[in-house]
Structures are given as structure tokens and as C-alpha cells.
Length: 80
Image (cartoon, rainbow, N blue to C red; front, side):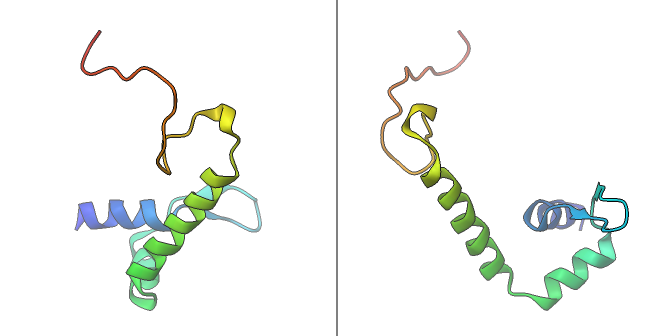
């Protein structure tokens, strides 16, 4: 149950308190409500698409490795 809640917190992200404007982690009851009320596969796919859109909008000079293609950098393996 601990691992599932960690994964769900990562998927759904933090929530902002409207009164104070601060960010906070979701409580277990809120996670269960979010998970049971929505299709988890749809949530994961929408988050992936949002990430892909973010990476696609980044400039070429950033050297992003996320969407395929070469970055032009040297790949190292292990400790140097």
C-alpha cells in the first residue's frame, strides 16, 4: 500500500491550497478518491502527452533526450 500511494502521489502531483496559495501533498483519503473516480490509464497517458508537449516546445540548444534523436553529447557508462 505504501508503494501504491507513493506512485499515486507522483502521478497526481501536489495540490495548491487556494486560501494560502501553498502547495501540499495529498492525503491517503484524497488519493483513494482521485484514483477510484478516474481511469488511471487515461491519467497516465494525459501526463505523458503533457510532458511530450513540453519537451517538443523546448529549443534544440537544450539537448533534450526524451523524444528520440541524438543529443550530440558523449555518453559515459559507469563511474569515471
